[in-house]
Image (cartoon, rainbow, N blue to C red; front, side):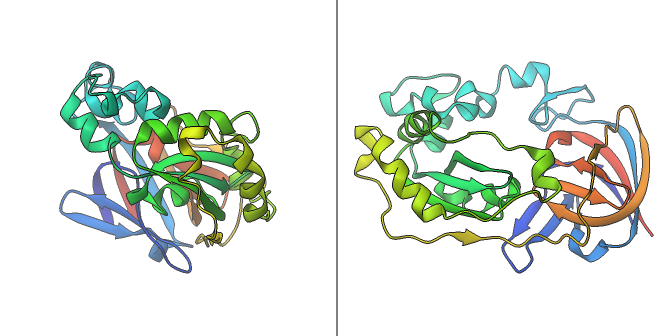
Length: 264
C-alpha cells in the first residue's frame, strides 16, 4: 500500500482501543490496521495548511507569514485567557473569533504523564484527551466562552501542572490517579466567575490506546534530518506513531509536511 500527501493530525474515533486515521486527498488509512507492519516514510516537501505554499513550516502546520496573519493562529489559541470576543474586541478577525471563542468550553484534568489542567471546546471532548495521550480524564467546569475557561486554567496552574511530559507519556510511565478527588480539591481555587459552572457529579473517562509495545528509550524522528525512515509500527498514542526500534514520530508537530508512505 502506498500513500502520498500532506500530513494533518490523525482523526480519531473513540473505541476500545481508540481508532486512528490518516487522511490524504482522496484517500485514508486506518492506522490501527497496519500495526506490526513495516512502514517507510519519505520526506518530500512542505505544504502550508493555509496558503498551500511549499515553504518551511513555522508552527501548527503554517508557514511563517500565515502563522502571524491568520485568525486560527492567534495568541488566544494557546493562551485562552487572552480571548476578547466576549467583549466585542477583535484580535485578527472578530467574526472568526466569535465563532470559536463564544461557545461552550471545558476545563479538565487529564492524566497522560502526570495530572495536568487543560482547556478545550466542548465539541472537542474526548478528541483533545486522545491527542494528548491521556489514559484518564475528567471535566472540572463547563463555561460559555473561551475567556472564562482561560482564567480558570490560569487559576489552577498554581496547583496542578499544565504541560505533558511526552517522553514519560510514550514510555507509559504513568499511574492511575483519583481524578474525582483531585477535581474536588481544586474547587476551592476556581475564580468566582467560574464557580457556578463547576461540574459536581461526573466520572472519569478512561481511554485505551492501540499499543503493542512501548518504547524503553524514546528517539524522536526528524524527517528533515532523516528524510527516509523505515520501521515496524508497534503502537499509536496521542498523535505519535511508535516503532519497534524506539523511534517515535509526532504527526501533529509535522503537520504541513508532504510525505510518501509505503506499507509492506
